[in-house]
Amino acid sequence: MADHGVRPGGSGRTDGIPMIPALRWEEPPEGPVLVLLDQTRLPAEESELICTDASALVAAIRSLAVRGAPLLGVAGAYGVALAAVRGFDVEQAAAALAGARPTAANLAAGVRRAKEAYDAALAAGDGPDVAARAALSAARALHREDAEASTAMAARGLALLDELRPGGGHRILTHCNTGALVSGGEGTAFAVALAAHRAGRLRRLWVDETRPLLQGARLTAWEAARQRMAYTVLADGAAGSLFAAGEVDAVVVGADRIAADGSVANKVGTYPLAVLARYHHVPFLVVAPWTTVDVGTPDGASVELEQRVGREVTEIGGVVVAPLGTQAYNPAFDVTPPELVTAIVTERGVLSPVTAEGIAALEGGA
Image 1 (cartoon, one colour):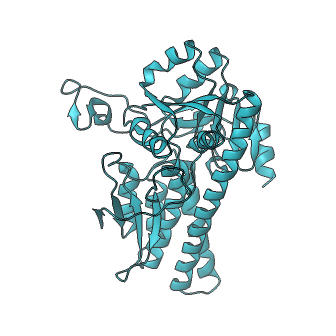
Image 2 (image 1 turned 60 degrees about the vertical axis):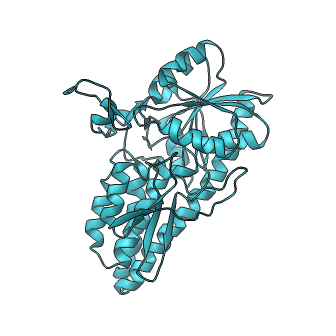
């Protein structure tokens, strides 16, 4: 079961308006719940979605009420713990959660981590209650680690920007949403821009609206406004004009899955930005925690790209904008080949050039 309600929110560090956490575990008298900030209602309304079982969380993931690769991993782990603590079928819950969004590597990884902790406790002879707490501990550890990774990536990403474009005054173009709404911390690509802002070295954050669901205009702009950053929203199709005018110093994006060869699957519209960046000699940086890297996916062609319903394209805000019966092509993600990526920034280090050998070296250095 799930319901909505406006809740008072806490927050981590912020230089602007406090934000309700994107996700948190609570244990009220009626039983444990996973509380999500409903991202489908932003920016008009800040309300929370209460998940009491894994099926409610699966529905929230599919509807994009909770989204973003790192946070999906954390949510998946908590979903396994929720099923275990409430006495539901953990195997079934884990399978449903892992398959809720196939492109996001973090989701399956988070589910796997909590499930392995649960199974290990049972194998050691512990009862279901102890095993459930083991799953919850694994989820909480992943949540903390993601926050720590966010901090590390922000520092590494800003240092790289300063190296590539000395003197500050960075004009950063980003795509989709990669801030605190998708992370246990302050995000991935957005966290780099935020670090530049706090250091007085961000001149402008260019925010792609990110069609068809406007995660840039609705969510990234919302986060940037709360942080009092200098930002401008642009239509996705205007990015080329922005490059041609010399107004972009770097493209900084996140990722939903990074293959073993360094291919990057991210929100659809990312690949065209990489092509534009290469033509205009602008650095193209991918910022993602190591949980996004899937060495079991050999290359970009092997990434399963989620296809979403056509009405997300043929409607805007519930208003039909295409003739009745119009077919729509609506992939949620596209793949950028490694040769178009200047660098991948992770908490483990910065990889440049992006190669299969480099990915393997960082994997082996864990």
